[in-house]
Image (cartoon, rainbow, N blue to C red; front, side, top):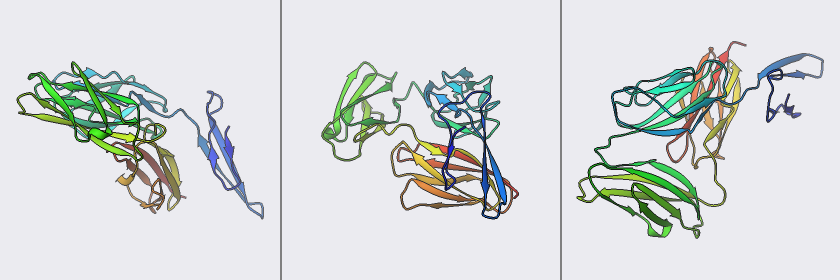
Length: 292
C-alpha cells in the first residue's frame, strides 16, 4: 500500500485495513544489487482533545480524553509535573492533580509513537484563565474560562486594536480583528476586583486559514547507525524550535525553519526529538537506531 517516488519518498495511504498494514520498498542499483525497507502503516496515536483542565486535588481522576490509534499498549512516557502522577489502564488516562500548573503528559505506544496531552491544573482559590494560550484566525472567535472563587473579576486586553472581548459569567469570548496583516500576539488579563491577583492568557491571531495542530513527520522512524532522516513540522505557530530531549545523535536545522536533519549516532539506542512552536506547545518524534 502507498506510493514511492523515484527519489525514494514514500507516502502512506490515507486509510488502511487490518490485512494491509505493511509496505515493502525495494531498491536496486545498476548492477542488480538490491535491498529492501519494511514500513509499518498505522493510525497515528491520538489524544482527543489534546488538552484538558482539572482543579487541584489529592484524589486520582479519569481525564475526559479519548486515546485512539497507535499500536498495542499505551503508557505514560514522561510528564512535566511529575508530582501529579499520571497512568493509563485500558487506554483510560488517570491523573492526580496535587500541584497546580501546566503539565505536558507524553503518551507512547509499543511501537514508539508519542502523543502529548496538555493538562492544566488550577487552584479554585487563585484566579486563572483556561486555556493559557490559543490560536484564532483573524475575524473569528475563541472562548476562555476564568476560574475565580475569590470574588468578581474584570478582563482587559493589552492591544485594543487586535480584537474585542465579551464576558458572560466566567466565559470570556475574544473576537479577533479582521483588519490585521500579520500574525499578532495579544494578552488577555483577568484581575480580581480588589486587584490582589491576576492571570494572563495569550492569543495568537493568524491570517488566512487555521494552521491546525502542531505536527512533526515522521513522528516515528527506525534508522541504521549514522543514518539520516529529515523531520518536517507543520501546524502551530512559527517559529519552530528543535531539541534533543533524550538519546544521542545530531540535529541540523534547515534555514527554511520548518525542517531539520537528524543524523543517528554510531551506537544503537532511542532518541526523542521535541519540536516546539511559538506558543510553547510541543510534539515528539521518536527515532530508534539499530546497527547496520
